[in-house]
Image (cartoon, rainbow, N blue to C red; front, side):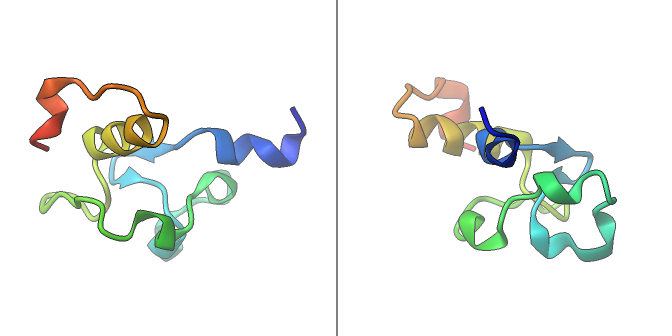
Length: 77
């Protein structure tokens, strides 16, 4: 796989949630290449306790995009 395609193949999550380009100065230099475009997450659930998108929402959305069944415990999230 070409190195340029690597960031598009996975999602990085830190303590604030999914790394997205709209996080500004919160992203470190090492995180920035792996941040997702903010527009890609329009309409995604954002946790009131986090400034970002929680891991459960990332898993749910990625599985839906890949046409995999979503675990029932994640459907209500």
